[in-house]
Amino acid sequence: MGFRKILAIAHIEFLFGYRRPGPAMMAAVAVLTVTMGAMLTITSFLPKKSECLETINNILVDPEAVKAMELAGNKIISAGDFCSGLVADFFHNEANTTTVRGIHDSWFAFLFFSLIFMTAACVPAFAADRQYGASEWLDSLPITGWTILLGKILGLGTSALAGCLAVLPIFILITLILLHTFPFGFAASLALLDGLPVILWSVSLGTAVGVLFRKRISAAFAGVGIGFFNFLAWMRLFNPLYGKGNSYDTPAYSVFQFYGLESPFSNKITTWHVAAMYSAVLLVFLFLMAASRAWLSWKENT
Image (cartoon, rainbow, N blue to C red; front, side, top):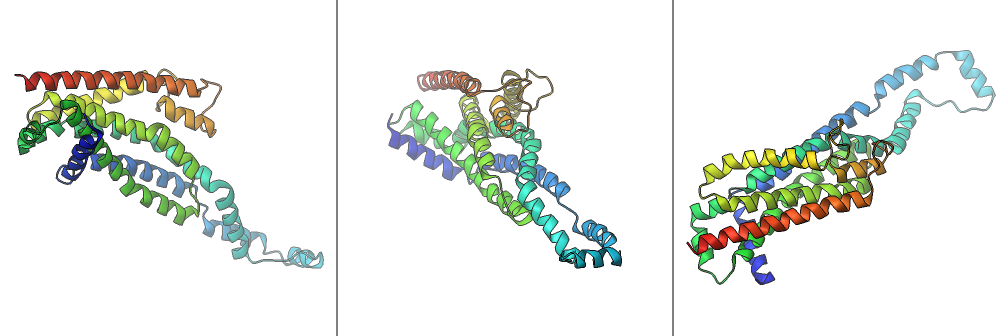
């Protein structure tokens, strides 16, 4: 099979993504929805300095109280300085919590866009090769169906991750400008434990099922249906609360529990729960790869 050959196919698929930017665009949109949702939460929690100034000015209008404080040796500061201190305290104590809450509240949108539209964007991959004549060129090379399949998944997955990385710095920069801090530990935990696996699974499913289609238009329409099935099945099978008012999968819920965003008493999620879930996903992935390779072999011999 050859790892170098897989990388070569992945490189070609990644470059071809500039002409078929679906996976990268869907990944960027998924991250953008989290960014927008988090921004709504952040801006709703930002302290209103004008309101603070008005409140403090009303407190400091009593000259007798000010004189008594001066005689007691207390330093009188301006209302503006006082409010700046309040804002600084907010930044120090509440900024990370606010951003974490914003990501938590909008994570469902990431799962929705990734599981549905990421999958749909990858289904036409093989059909596009046939349309542009790339499949005949690939068939003429001394490579197996495994190499083509794994190379395309790697290339499309890299393209999707590039889309994420194109938007993520914008999210971080805006948050740093508004709040002067960013919860890198929380974001990294959620991205590595749930975000990255969801993207790779959606890419793998869409690419593997895409071997069945010869025309891009039929693959595109079928991809939307497959994406919705993927979303419904994922959220149903991997719901830690078994559908009882929960909008997250098991890995995301475990991260939220760790950071105190979900109650650990309703259904404690441990590392074993997450490991069991991804073990099941891995088995399905291997089955999909075997079935797709068998289909490609059958088509090669007919």
